[in-house]
Image 1: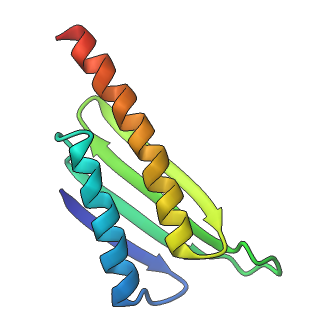
Image 2: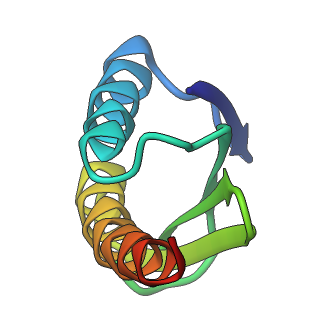
Length: 100
């Protein structure tokens, strides 16, 4: 799977990029037809502590899956996004296998 990462209003360090890549690679075990993933890291200029936004757009056959989470740390956001995508991919796989 090809992963495209973009960071808005800051520069992402290598550790965050590697962490995200490892987490997204694990999604292949749940659904092997993932084409690519677009990951957007954003920092909001707010007074609250939860100002980190992560959006993941996953391209799979039959339509794209989109997840957006807001947390205190980007790693926490990536964990939540991947968990949500994992559930969506399992549902998608069950639907596809029902038609096969």
